[in-house]
Amino acid sequence: MREELNMDDLTQVAGGKVYINTRTKKIGFKNISGVYPLQNGASPYEALELCDSLIGKYATDAEYDQACINALKAKGWI
Image 1 (spheres, rainbow, N blue to C red):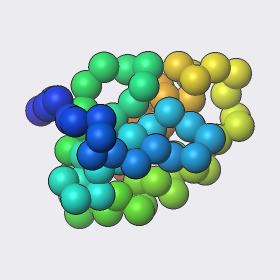
Image 2: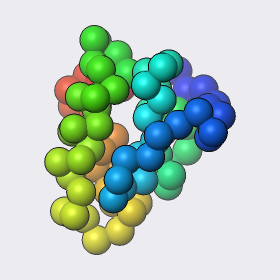
Image 3: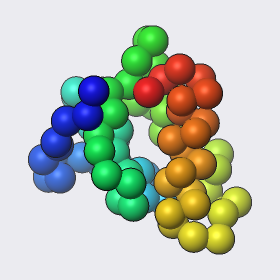
Image 4: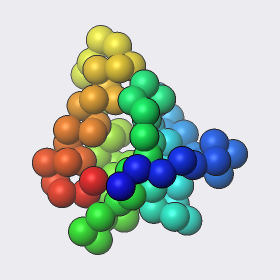
């Protein structure tokens, strides 16, 4: 289920375009519309760590955002 988030209520991952709300445990991406709730017990910090591990591996922000979504989906976290 996708929901809208207030951008003032988010924290940006340094070096990437991922936004994580630690209070509501939701994640969003600059280049991909939608907001995803973290699932299956994933903490915002685990999601941050996973996305951080992908920084610098992609030529564009859009590729990075998609890689983050793919990795989070593969773990069952979104």
